[in-house]
Length: 212
Image 1 (spheres, rainbow, N blue to C red):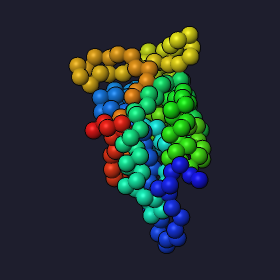
Image 2 (image 1 turned 90 degrees about the horizontal axis):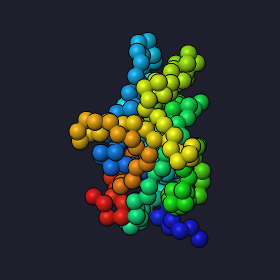
Image 3 (image 1 turned 60 degrees about the horizontal axis):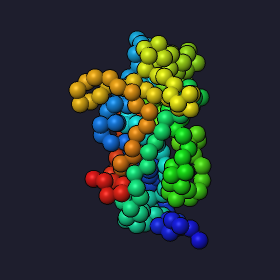
Image 4 (image 1 turned 90 degrees about the vertical axis):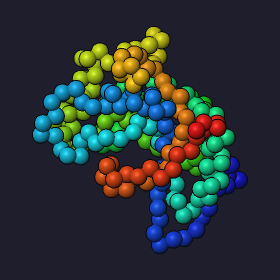
């Protein structure tokens, strides 16, 4: 018997797919955004490269018409905010995983995926994408160029004897830079990811563990 009884099975002619994003606080989100813009000249790249988006871990997705959304929101609101620890920075081979933070798969995060993705896996879970870069640009070395820009600017360093990484981000409070090795996830966003990235729509935000 599923722990997540808010999933139902019904037939519909039109299905609406919603992604669940595990979000940092606004402050930590802005800190991460400060390194998401490329540090090099991007003249001539595809229009689909480097679209703006909010950093997140995708827990999974569900068909809206098959889900008791209110029950899902109640369960989410009772879950303590988990920590998202940064393991490494990787260059990927897919548009939505062009360059990303590989996250340590803690028991908390693995349990969340089991609960909210019906136990199914998602590619390279858990991770936080830093840039979406078109395949055409990647073939010309753009993903590697973005990553090397972070390295050459001293934005990445190892921590704990190589057991994780820290990222030097701009602090939104005073504009100074400091090192970030994790974030505390405070919300889950319900996001309809249809069309171009710029067209994605955040439908609802649910605080974790009573967070508002």
